[in-house]
Image (cartoon, rainbow, N blue to C red; front, side, top):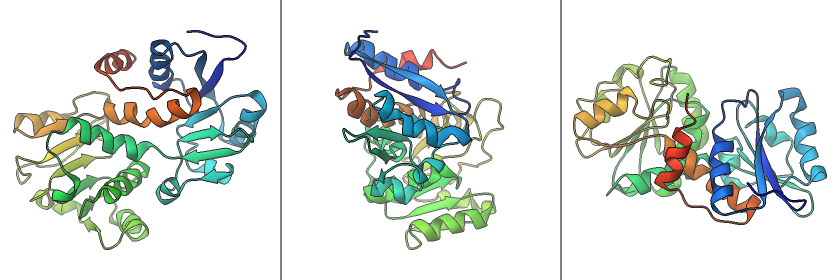
Length: 282
């Protein structure tokens, strides 16, 4: 790491933030591109978020990422939000302008989509329906990204149907179809993409309860969970012959726009980067 009095500084705010892999991720790029700068974790309590964000330009910090629980709250603090993030209803990347204004965006959906496009050979958004399991904050970003990419229909499955219905009405009632939980396996027919946006299958959590018998062999299966890298869902899909995409790529690709904005270099996502970040999982 190279640091001088002219160093470019960015970081990540969360509560807690100690688990974040972003310092390891951005640190790899900073070393690779020999950037005079640093990316540091900031433990920020919810009641301190406004003060900490407003302090960024005063400290000469170029911006930050936001993680739980700050992604929604920050929208009320920043000076500008791009249309994509406003539709999602959350922000994860803050850029400090030369005038000190705080501009916010959400790169989660972009990272998700790029991960699929790069790693799922032959998958085309316009070719058929997608199924998303879960209706939380992550699902919002995924739905917006898929709709913008031209996916003709999204089947949204969630244990609490009312939450899924609310999300569908807000984002795209004519393109997002809410599926009853007890029909979650039947709705897999003719889909081209299946995505688990829940924490089911994460280390310490039970696996996603989903029967893949009706899933076409040509469908791509993605899990946004990356610890473990191969979740029970991905293992089952792989064993039956489906093409699978793990969740780590979403984390890596969503980081690219922020690094470019803060440090002036467009970084590449490589296998060496993947291995460096994976080494940080515990």
